[in-house]
Length: 357
Image (cartoon, rainbow, N blue to C red; front, side):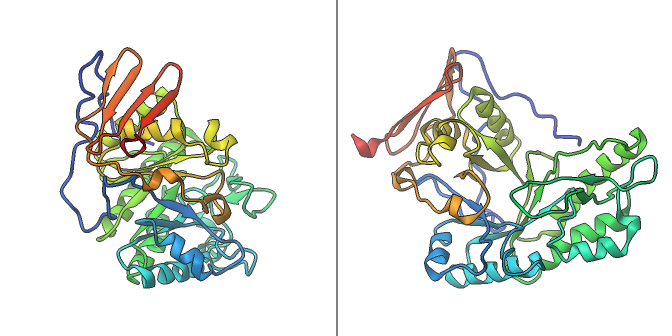
């Protein structure tokens, strides 16, 4: 896929990292955001069905809640659209300002969606190899799926782009879904598919992501691991405390994106089940801009997200400026008096919380 060409905002020496945390005016189409404490989000599902009242109250602590494909998967096989909408309604009943996000995949035809029925009924919607056979791809194996893989949406065709976009946009019209999460937004190549078809697919994939963002009047399309012109948001999945992760996030922030960082797949945050998040959180704070949000989990079911780290309640405050870098070490200070450092060579971070002194 053709990503936005973004100039690096990393400057050498003690000069500030330019344009990486530029403030934006408040936008009603964006989730609530504050520097008062760590800005956080949650992205999960409950495979056993409806959330308990206590669990819903926990979800309502987050300004942005994405509901995953596996919602209620142990109760019935279909349909994810209805189950996600039901959870969104329950969350909105507690706090209508929370931005609820509908998860779906921009490549794979997951069979727990009603969309799958349309795909089965329309073989012309399937991306095909040069020999005419349908492309099939495996997904995250923690979720139920056919052994031979799933069908792939053929975005070379406008009718398929309209079909895929409508799944999100129709739900947004209910008033209970604010935006949508497009998984595999950066995937563009498939074995056995001709170069010409892959190029047409790449262009079509970009177009459908932009189509959805354009149709969302009061929300964002979150493109996973992908920054694209005329879209508003991205997730950096597999975020961890490394210099490369800091640079990647700085680029996304400098492009004006809402940025979700997802830690928990690697490093001490994974080994500790997201109890030790210092390195990843320090990396996040070095790069964070307006509408940057932190999250940590080792998976996508609710039990992996059902924790509230002590760091989330500590006073933070507006950053006093963009991060500065001397040698390999970034430094940034916040209005509360909290000071953050991150060493891009050792991949270690420190957070000197003012409230702990």
